Image 1 (spheres, helix red, strand yellow):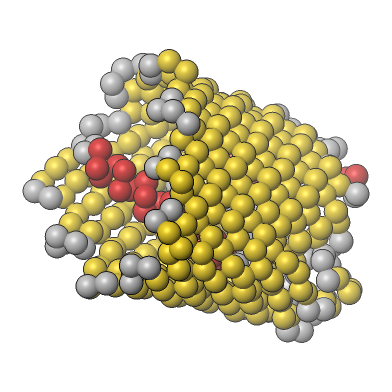
Image 2: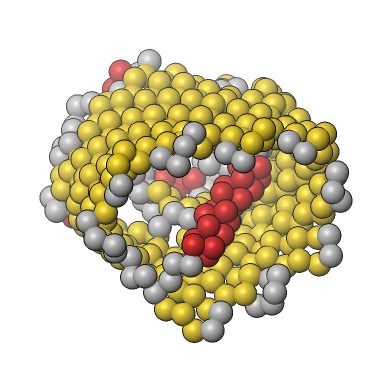
Length: 398
């Protein structure tokens, strides 16, 4: 969801995606190669059983979901330094008992990225699509299976590297589109601006300041248009090649305009903090931890103030057998800054997942997944529990 720090969150997500593409390119995986052009084709088929598709306490219904997907990753170096990356994943979610929920799916992370290097400047042009069709993955949603969104972000980032000083400025235009009629009041456009200045204290440590601004306008007059601003400090500490710590903290201000016909809210101010840690302990074991506090735009209210904690572990137990464990907790308040008309709710949301993958052949991988989601609320009708079990076959034409 767009927030005063969505510009920063989007920039960090783009860095992770770009790193994944670089690793893929360096590993040399491809299905088709023509000169410098590389294309990797990865089809997959999964089937899930969900015991509560409605994420509801009183109306829990189960279903089997068939999910075919075709993932295409292409890269082409236009010059020695300028690389074009395209990633597209297209699939379909077929609900066997609740066909009204069946829908086409665009894989999250699909997008286009183009890097241009001019002396000390790196310019990145990008368009990235984030897709969500799973009510249980949004902590603020309960009582409906219809929550689905497409979030498209297009823009550019300019990084000026002066050895001991790094300056960056990014601009993005973001469109948020709801797939369900009942949530179309969330459709909006946002302008996201991010500025950062980092100073290299020593070869292992960088510290700096960051500032963001966000301007959001809704298509309908249900939630209030707003402007969000944040300013703070950050640091990056990497004592070794396999350990990375990045803390940040600052202050956020939201200014709401009275464009809603039913909701009246006040301007909102709060602190933000985030600590992200990644550690590759051995070639077989790695973990990550992310925790913090933030304000973000609401679902049935103008805003949500929440605290979160998200650890994850990857473990390659033996050759060809991998284990992934993740956990996420969020304590949130919908209707922060409420006056009249917002949904006011305090909730706790837990989700834990376990995934085991086994390389059946050099190209075929079998995955077994389990996810448990629990939600409690001071509004008891918005509490629920959900179990999701799945099998997945992935084939990599390489």
